[in-house]
Image (tube, rainbow, N blue to C red; front, side, top):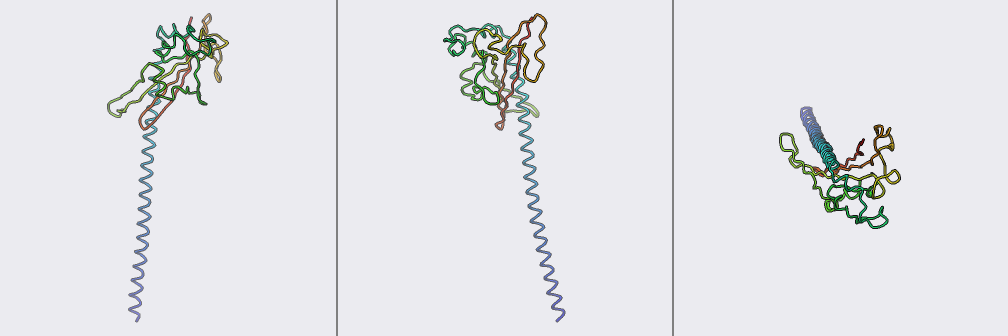
Length: 222
């Protein structure tokens, strides 16, 4: 009688151990799946951050292209023109020089912006490409650890004025004005005040990464 009881007790112990082992295996499997998901998420985030950083670096190329444009003779020649602008000149849009402005990705007064100061026109690629004529820069870096898909870079130059025509202290922000949070521009004695320009660069990269960067620049003249 006692022999049978010991045999049944041993079988019950084996059954409990088996149940515990199964529970431990399930927990381990769930833990491994969670770890894999964590690794995948970390890799995805790292990749997105890398692409975002690459798009920010590409924005510098757009700024350099804007600087090249601003150094051109036509840039200084046409920005003060009010020829053909319907009266009053500060509200006209059909100025004779509008075609020249478009060739420079330039506008002589501030355009409508969103709450972050980004011009609405550059946020719409179709409208921007139809209005301005400098084609987007397509950056293709082919090689080890390089982005083979490339980034699209667009830039817009706005003169920080409220009106067309020659810049003045009434309607424009000049280089002698002190920007908020700064000490102003270091003007040389006897130099002429120049209008400030806002350069906005939009970069579209892989994985739908999108970056906007802005700079405020001016000409330093004797």
